[in-house]
Each structure stands twice: as structure tokens, then as C-alpha cells.
Length: 164
Ligand code: GDP
Ligand code: MG
Image 1 (cartoon, rainbow, N blue to C red):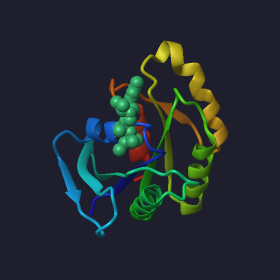
Image 2: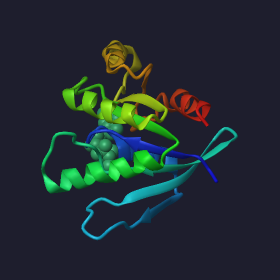
Image 3: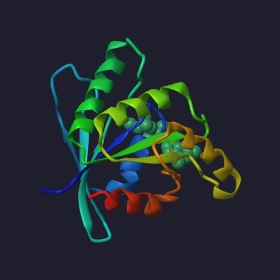
Image 4: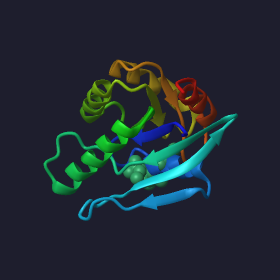
């Protein structure tokens, strides 16, 4: 069967925007356990000669004891456990925050290959310098992208399919 790629990161970094940009119309929603607020969403994606199944997740807020946020974290953990490759999204406008480092620790524990995407780089000339600090997460090269402007997605996907 096809490799599975999960998109994870804190709420509002642009996971769903990236998912929709890559998914086109091939989206299916799968209902999970009742009470789990955000359902996993799947899409089939083709990049060059590689096909894979992509999963969007509700988001990870590492420290929160809020029931909805902890359920979202649980959902993300399921996606991480299922995935062959993880796209970890951060937000260049917020910069590197402590919660990103905690998500990075979670991903490291999974032992899965992680591709680090730094989103909202809407202007590659002005914002590219701000991407470098994400090297401090210690999970490799940060790929600058703009999910809403569809910039940088090809280089990021090249890195994703390299791990299949
Ligand atoms: P999620 O919670 O991680 O799924 O984030 P969403 O995809 O819902 O996006 C959160 C907010 O960030 C929305 O207002 C998006 O329009 C915005 N957003 C997503 N991608 C980009 C981007 O590349 N550039 C900018 N400027 N905003 C973005
Ligand atoms: Mg979302």
C-alpha cells in the first residue's frame, strides 16, 4: 500500500492550508471515536512518480491540559504512529517557540523521518533569514514554504518522497 505522510504542528501554523494545497479534490474524512473533536482527514497525493496518502491533524499543543487540545494531541500521536514520513510545520511569523521544541521532542521519540517546513514565508526575499533559527530544533534543514501562496512546496515534497 501507499506510504503515509502526516502533517503535524501546533494549531494555526497552516497544516490544513498545506493539506488543501496538496490535496486538490481527493479528500476523505474518517470519523474516529465519538468525543474526539477533530477527525483525521486523508487525501491521495501524487508528486512526480510517487503516490502517497496524506493525513491532516488537528494540531499539537504540548503542555495544555485542556480536554480538546489534549484530544488533538492524542489524534496527532495516532497520525505520527501511522506515518512513514512526518511533515512538521512551524510558523516563521511567530518564530521558534518553546512548544515547537516540545513537538520536535515528540517527533524524535517516534523515530520516523521528519521533514521540517517553515510556513508563512510569503516573501522569500524578506523572510528567508528568519528561517535559519529553526535549525535550532535539531531535526535538520528547515524548508521555507508558503502554503497559502504555494511557494516552496516542490522542494519540500522532493525531501518527503526521498524517505519512501
Ligand atoms: P492549522 O491550524 O495548522 O491547520 O492552520 P490553518 O491551515 O487553519 O491556518 C491558520 C491560519 O494561517 C489561517 O488564517 C491561514 O489562512 C493562515 N495561513 C496558512 N498558511 C499561510 C501562509 O503560507 N501564509 C500566511 N500569511 N498565512 C497562512
Ligand atoms: Mg487545521
